[in-house]
Length: 328
Image 1 (cartoon, rainbow, N blue to C red):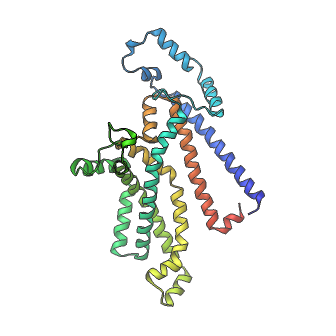
Image 2: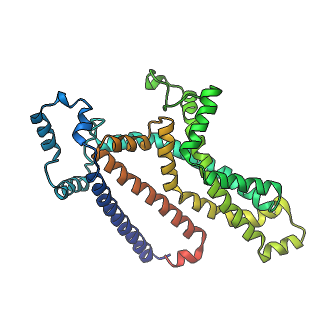
Image 3: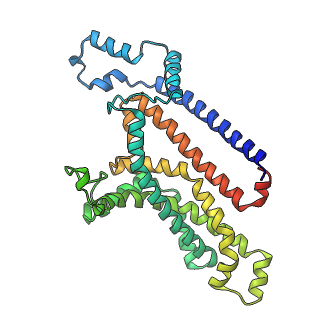
């Protein structure tokens, strides 16, 4: 791949990202503007008698709520271009700082679930493909079809009832024990609080990887060179190691990288069920509390995160397939 084609490829991706962020910003700001939630009342609380009409007017003027929606959007957009995402109304802190703190917790959760679902999904897909038509194959396919139609929050509630309420093996929620200083929390306690959200998120993500891996492996096993190898006496794990693994591993990894968007969507639900202090819980709180700066900041960051995942998947495809590299 020449340097000219690579620069053209990077510029094209940068243009797509810029267009995506602008479109997401306009759409998100429009939806927030049409929301029936009163930002000032959400900021003050249910008891509006604590604030006089003059104080309310001052708050609206300070936030720029008296300006038109277009003026508010232009002011917010100009601040974003300068690297200022604003100040959260709920947390009284910079939006960038909150996103960085919450994303660190979400990244641990999503990374754990992403790795577990990839390993389990790939293994089940290989077993199912190598034993096509067997009882194990039918059981794995049925398991995946059930998972594909199972909502993440419902599975999370089941795990919560079973492992926390009935068995008492894991805590009911939160990312760490309540009432304990951050420095006094052990690694074991953090893992205990992480286990159920990660389990919920990883189990839901297994189905796509399994079914994709199974289908790719069946295509490989039906090829002429594999039939020739089988005619020469190769079978079982040796056949898979020499002819199947190299042909299905990278496509499965690429698919898994492309699932960042679904992973984040599932993390939002899992974090709500388990009260896990991640970015997903923050976006729900921002939406319900009409915290516009935080909500828009998270939306932009999420769009960037999903775009990055899709870009990594695209680069992996080009790394695996030389024909795509020549067309870059």
